[in-house]
Image 1 (tube, rainbow, N blue to C red):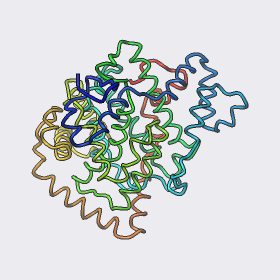
Image 2 (image 1 turned 90 degrees about the horizontal axis):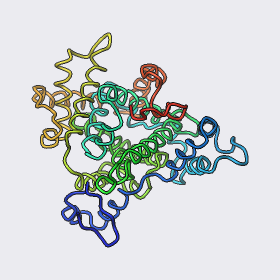
Image 3 (image 1 turned 30 degrees about the vertical axis):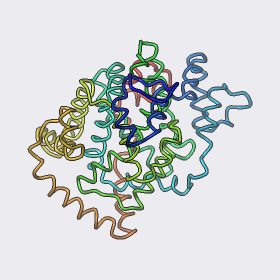
Image 4 (image 1 turned 120 degrees about the vertical axis):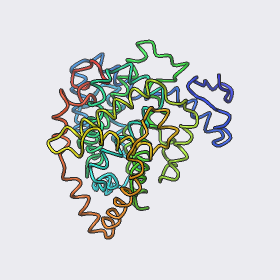
Length: 402
C-alpha cells in the first residue's frame, strides 16, 4: 500500500507516490483524498430520482430548462440543491465569453478536430486503468465505441457553441446531464461490487479532472503536433471557458483554478499521470474499439476521406506523434507508415492556420465556416434513442454507459 500523510486512505490504483511527491509535494495527499470523493450533489439527485420516478425526472428536466424558480416553492431537496449550484454562475465568469462560445474549439476545422482532437481525448481517457475498467464493465465495446464517439462529439459541440452554456441552453443541459450520467454509473458500479479500496470511488473527482484535461490540454496538444496551434489569447480563453464547464460538471474548483493555460495545465496532468498505472488490457481494448469507430465514421460516408486502411494508418500515426512511442506502444497502437509524412502535413496545416489567424476578421470568418457543419440535432439523429446522458433522465435507465 503506498504511503501518505496520516489518516489519508490511498487507493491501490495510485503508483510511484514517492517519485510523484518529489515533484508535487503535498498535492499527492490531496489527490489521494479526492480519489475517494465522487459528486455528493449529483449522487443525491440520482437517489431522489429513483425514489420519485417519473415525476422527479419531469421536475429535474423542467428545472434544467426553465430554472429552479419554475419548480414552485417546494421542489425536491436534492434537485433543488443541484440546480442552485449550477445556476450560481461564479463571479469570474464573463457573460460575453459564454455568448461568444468556446472560440478555440470552434476555430479548428471539424474534420481535424474529429480526426486528431477527439481521438486523442478519448484515448488518453482510456489510458487510465480505473476509467477503462469501469467503462468495460458497464458497456459492450462493439456498440459502446461508436455511440460514445458520436455522443461525446455532440456534447462538445453543444457545450462550445455560442450561448451553449447559458442557463437552459442545449450545452448547459447536456453538461449537467453528463454529470448525472456519471452519478448513475457510479451508483451502478458500487452496487455491483466495485472495489473502492483498490480503485477509489468510481468516476471520482480525480477522474473528472482527467476528463476535463482530455478536452482542454490533450486534444490541443495533439492538434499542435499536427500543425494547428492556438494563439496565446485562444489558449487563455480555452481554459477560462472550460473552467465554467468544470463548474457545471461538478469538478471542485481547487483542481482547475491554477490551470489557466496549457503550461499550467501540464502541471496538473503530470500530477495525475505520474500516479496512474500504465494502460492495461481494458485500456487497449477501448483504444482499439475507438479507433475502429473513428475509421468507420470517417470512411463510411458518401465521400470518404480516404480508403479505410490508409485512414486507420493515419490515425495511428497521429496518435503516436501526439502521445509518443512509449505510451502508444502500451496502448497497442501500431507503428504507422504515415509517420514520415506527418511533419509535412503539420507544415501545411501550420501555414493554413497562420493565414486563418492573420486578422481578427479572417479568424472570425473561419469560425463561422467551421460552425456551419451538421447541427448537434442532426448528429443526435444518428444515435438510436438519443445520447445516453439524455436517455437516462427521460425514463431509460438501462445500460447507462452503452
